[in-house]
Image (tube, rainbow, N blue to C red; front, side, top):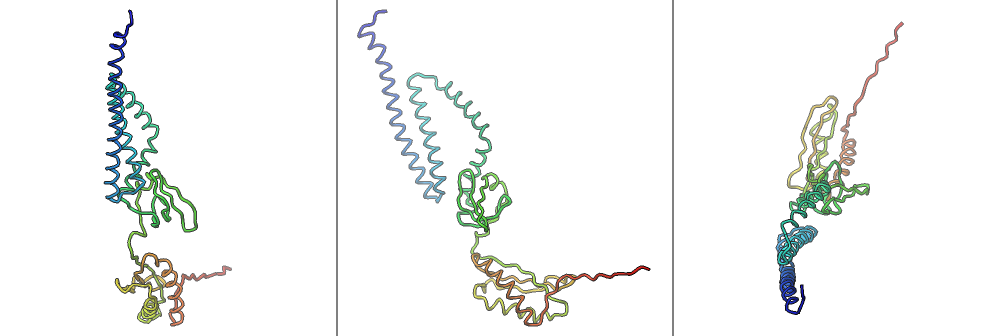
Length: 269
């Protein structure tokens, strides 16, 4: 076959036009993908979605749009896109099976960021552990305990279990059980406890504290003491009340019984 200028142009020109169209589709498509991704990110930020989730979902959306643009450009060149999609689908399935646990943690992380059962700084109990949340990632939650130990929990273990968020509400009730002897005067004991509660400014007046007889136990009359405090003051007030109530009850002549056991020894002759 003899190649001349006309033959060369006849062969090259169609391919050149296809390549130009493919490049045009890729350039314009990439610009549109960036614009659409930017718009979606703005919408997600306006809905107060977590910034880490905004960036990650934005990246996924941009990647999906860019892949669609590339496939459209390749299709312009005459390449069989259907076969390419079948190969990519098979590869994606294999990768998905290999990363099943990681994808499960990722899906749980997305749900945590969307529904926000807790935020950074909250004290939570989940997955069998308790601590303050330091970081909410796409694959795990980082926490530290009261004695400053680092805890790393996979997101699937967090979202798949009951979550107790101690810091979610502004107020919290302290539940104490104070046992007094059967010989003690219940009204006097309640007045002493009321005085201790009334002297602490951290205890809220509304809801009103509750002091009542809860149980006539084997060796004591058990009183429940239930004052309300700000969540941040919970432990400080609890420790203070336990110590002060004991001291004041003893000063008032109210004894706090403790379990006792009588041992009888018999001599057999």
